Length: 238
Ligand SMILES: NC(=O)c1ccc[n+]([C@@H]2O[C@H](COP(=O)([O-])OP(=O)(O)OC[C@H]3O[C@@H](n4cnc5c(N)ncnc54)[C@H](OP(=O)(O)O)[C@@H]3O)[C@@H](O)[C@H]2O)c1
Image (cartoon, rainbow, N blue to C red; front, top):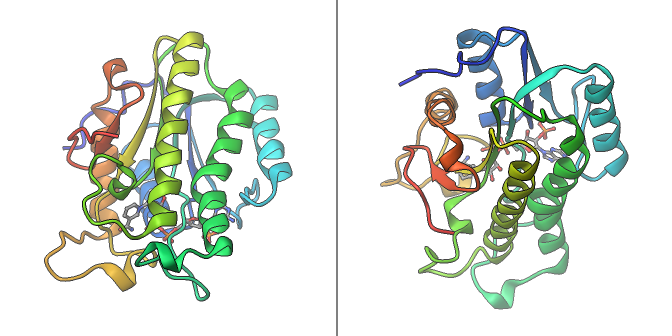
């Protein structure tokens, strides 16, 4: 149910990082059409205020822009991430580990988001409700790992989950109304899942997933700070 992100004052701003990806684009569109934010910024490698995780300078510059504009940022959703490309597929076993694939996975799923947290921290509100949601993946849960494989993706998302936890603790010290979470979007029909969305999985369209994710985000309160939740609002153990 799309309940209530409209608790936020009408001068609030939202940022969607990775706004050009399958889920990010749908989230950006849905926020613009269903919620009352004054400004909604979509950041990607192609946007005017652009961010490329491989360029620390681009993250710093983007954060400086938001700081200088003193916008009332109340929601950030990070939708960027990486699983495979033309060169690399996820490992089936430990013997498949490739340093270049592993580095790329960690850069995209952990280091880039960590730099984003570092540079955007000063931009975030010191009081009032603020939500920072990071799209993670259930396979990043260590306690849920029954199959092994996908070592780089799993471990880079586990690292992201740890970063979310650290960020939630520091944000709480600064603003008791902050909520920082990791969200598993489930299997969504995007480029990222294409080779893997087998029959039997509950594959949803990006638009459906965007509504589900925003419904979870709408329902968050401060007791959820630092948690890992799925698109049905069920908590996942780290
Ligand atoms: N789809 C699923 O079934 C599924 C399942 C579990 C978790 N997830 C997670 O959900 C998130 C979104 O996935 P998706 O399915 O929407 O994937 P996607 O369509 O492949 O989108 C990936 C996003 O990452 C961005 N990106 C790629 N390289 C980048 C770089 N160097 N710097 C900054 N951004 C970069 C892309 O931007 P460009 O447009 O600029 O390339 C794009 O916005 C990911 O974190 C993924 O791990 C997805």
